[in-house]
Length: 271
Image (cartoon, helix red, strand yellow):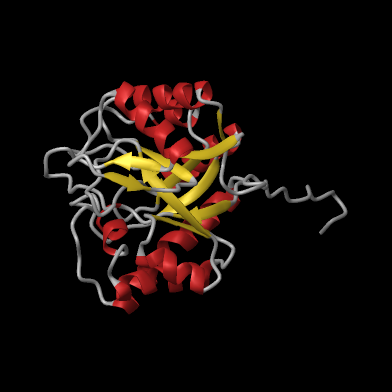
């Protein structure tokens, strides 16, 4: 049986970039991995804890979703951050989520950069290296998600980090395998039937059709539905149904993703 992970970027809160109210709980019922916003582009400590706990209750893997320090721009503006500064910022974000997740009994399994940082580390050597160094500093067992052929995955693999190739059911692709910028035609896929068809083809055939009609080869281990894409819940539901009909099992890409941390209860004599 073909197996694929289905992830969503969650815990990002509300804002002008979102056309519909957040539907994190509904998406957590449909996905197998959750990339939790770590406060720099969205979310906060309380939201991180609640999202991690909700994911744990459903057996959904928890990942860190760090970004540029750009809350005003929702992390979708490219920032020329020096590598040492970016490394410290990613350590802060990932390490913070690791601690918050542990406090609610969950375990962080992976890291997926957000927005403009995700796009930057496809080709930017310095910023990709900063992200990889940050992940290594926090926990070298964490997997790194990225586009196939991206620099961040190459550097992560070289450093011994687990890597996961990701594809997007709700984003348009250029012929070179990169994502169409959000301000250009074809950037978003909002039709559930189209998203479902793309998901099955990605999972089964390893191909997606670019906006110009070019077939782009992919071999993703994880598919993403953005939580702020209009109709995200309907998209995810259609994707899950279509994958099931095609004989594709949806499950987290990391084995034993949920490892509750249970401390012994002190007895009256344990002082």
